[in-house]
Image (cartoon, rainbow, N blue to C red; front, side, top):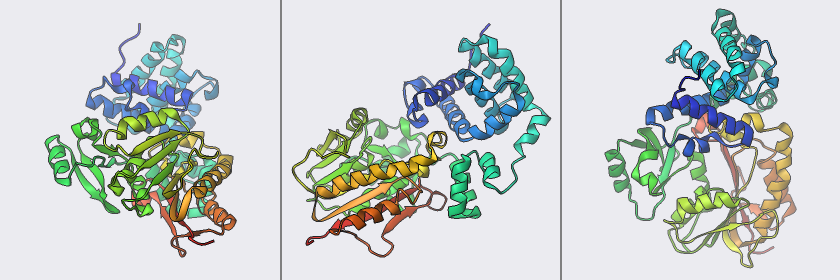
Length: 437
């Protein structure tokens, strides 16, 4: 007999399966049709279960392997996800009764038509609950890359890399930061929304916010559900990380600027460029993925009529005869600065990819520079903490282009280290094209 499973756990189970099978992002699925029917309390629990399980995946698997008679890689994916969900609740959610965590994980396996695995899931999670298993949670006190990897549930190769680069103290700060729930930041995304109207409207819908230390334009939710407000539903505000919001400011925009963004994604920085310019001169936003630009159009085109969305591969010749005053190259990268917000990246990224991104990033910069007017500005940005994708790319580009230079020659890079700035990790360089070459 299959008993009903709580809506929050069922939604978390389905989302984690999609993350594993389809390389989807949990943050997107948590705001999709999979959670539309959830009440706010259930959505909060589903969010905690999804992100918590992803963040602690390595540690959970270590303990589950200790308690299991079968190697985890040989198990059905549904069984692994149910075990991780149960183990996460047993270890990290003290408010959840142990019997409920175990029972519902068993029922999830049954609902997935794997009744034969129900007894196994029950036995493993009961062992996780015992004192013998509990000792394994505290077995990672060694301050080595291997010990810290298990203790903070990050890939060992990445911990080893960061330990050599940042040192032990800053490394632990970063790992701890990545395992905390991210704050929600937003900004105005409408030409006619004033600060006073924003404050009044959100206060009337039980949402409180404050400004970020880095910029008064960056707003942080401190109480309430911003996603349920009329301003969010009408696209008059945009949810966007604090670090991401800082990048368009580096373009030093003027009203007359004609602007271009490469790799625009869902258009957060593109619409911010339109807002900062405050004029009808065009902003062209390019991305390789048509579906992303469809989302961008839905989120931003109602408020910014001068946004033009173009699907193309920006590593190939761009579909423009004209050149631009300001260009943002928001380059694809490893995303190691976003592991708090996108914990699934920890388990997808491979060490060799960090070097592989370099060729793509340089090709994007090359194409952008060919379309930059003399005296114009390029901002190159990533959400990576890795120097191979950041300073090394910029120096390589500058060495190959005598007509390009850093706008700020000494220390001309913006680097946001997440534990210190309370943002995602970002890098940016501001470069100009000389008027005479």
